[in-house]
Length: 266
Image (cartoon, rainbow, N blue to C red; front, side, top):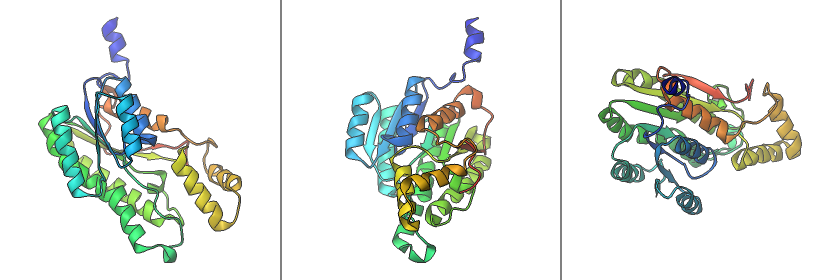
C-alpha cells in the first residue's frame, strides 16, 4: 500500500532535488521556493532586493542565497559558482527573473528601457541556462523551467518590450527542449496570466493612467478577457512547477503551459 501511495503522489521525486530559482525571494519566485521546499527540495536563490533576501534567509536558513542580477554575466557566474559549492550539483533551474518593462506606445518607449527588459527577461535566461546545462548533464539529467507569460502567446499593445521578450522565451524553450532532450533534460515554459500582486497592480495602474480611466475600471477590462474572470495566484504557478519537477512530469518537455484562468486576449 505504501508503494501504491507513493506512485500516486504528484510530488514524488522532488525530495532531494537541488534547485536554483532566480528572483526567488519574492512574488512568484518565493511561492515556488515555498512549494518546492515543502516537498523536500534543496534550494539556492538569487534576487536583487536586499530586504527580500534577508527575509528569505530567515524563512529558509538552510537554503543558499545571493544578490545577483541575471542580466549581468559576472553576477550569473558568481551565482552558479556559489550554488555549485552550496548544493554540490544541480537538478533543476527555474528561470523566474523578469521585469514588467515600460508601458507606452512604441514611439514613446526609451530604447534603454527596451534593452533592459530584453536583457532581464530573455538574455538572463540564456546566461543562466548556459551555466546550468553542464551541471544538469553531470547529474544525469534534470529540468529547466522558463518563465514566459500570456504575453508570450498574444500580442500586447503598449507593452511591446515585455511581450517581445516573452515570445522569445517560447522560442528559447522549444529550441532547448530539442537540443537537450537526448541528455535527459526537460525544458518547459510557464505562461502565467494576470497574477495577483504588486507587479500586476502597477501594470494596471499605469495603463489606467495612460487611457484616463480608474484603476477599478481597468482591472475589470483586464479580467473581461479571462474566461474564469479572476486572477491567478503565485502559488498556482508554484504548483505547476512542482508538477513539472516531479515524477509525474517526467515526460513533459517542450511545452508552453498556461497558468492563467484561460486568458483569451491581452
